[in-house]
Length: 502
Image 1 (tube, rainbow, N blue to C red):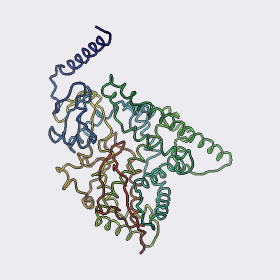
Image 2: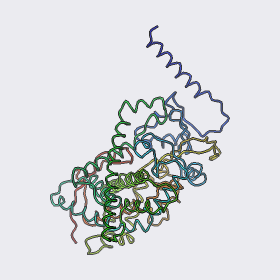
Image 3: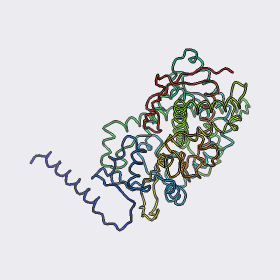
Image 4: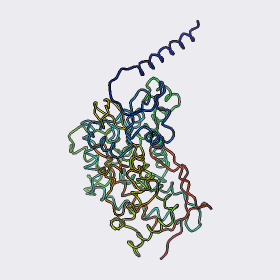
């Protein structure tokens, strides 16, 4: 018998032992309903290209609290408002941990960011720092001028092409304006279209978002992690992480140098971007833990992960729905143009009076949540959930899209109807569990106001200045999806803009 045959037989024997151990563990636990699973893979083969849809289909057969296995990792899938409330409110503390993900470790400094760090004192400290110093209501409102200026700049860009009736790539426009807003607020200036370094940063962010949204087989079947090395995804992530790290080091160094110059010249400019705010916190010892440069860079990358890709996809889906529904578009335009009157530019004070704008954004978030399956949670100890036994170390996937399209909670759930929010107190701030695009509880997204402020001003500005039409002869809009970090339109959204004159 040759060496190759011996190795193959030994490998087969080990695999058979793993399968036997996996399926023969005695248990007297009352586990949630679970579909049949394959050896080794478990239920991974049932996830599909669009997990939010395939998991909803499985939940319709097995229930809103369903236990899957990804490899040998138990994964609890939550698909209803009641079960979501159990996880994110009643037992929020138990389910406040994050599972370790190799891609997050590579891209986010060993998962030292807010979204992916393990539950504990470190996470509490950095989340408190971000909420207090970066994402407070007062701080978000202080950046209104930046959002208004970039929205006005976007209008001038569109006007250059509007007169020629050439279809505009709205996906590209939304990505650009969102990136410019976040760059100015976080880093102090735009990093797009301003030279080779700026263009490279834009490319890096796109690749960063794509990689962060990928699933690594090694996270669920460790002995198959070599596959991620073979396909080059880990190497690619390491390259992106290194280049982003070098870029952020350069940005921080520029801010330190600028701060010293202002101090020497006796300038008293207000701190108005995230890097300056974080440097100020770092030097003032205003936090009760060791706040180093690595932590600062991890927080800054979180701002881009949560503030760009997931923010502009809301604009993309909102305009796609409006192009399909001219009556809804006209109603939105009437509200915006009535509020603004003869003035050319919209201010954020105007948005207070635009209830239909807010309703359109809410309905878009309901039907097209940017992250349809919320960032995974993990149980820290065993717990009873709806009468079922949930073991410690169980991962939890909350299918926010399934919850938001549940006919038990919503009338005509798959229809785009902004009017449903006009006389409703239901909101996305984490108290109404039938509508949780930003999550809820301890692990809810702290940047809700930051993201919605961008979406509202950009959408209102677009419909104020222009009339819009689909370039397709059939007037149909391709609503096909594609998954990454956020749920995007598969094809770029094209539209024809006609300047509006009273």
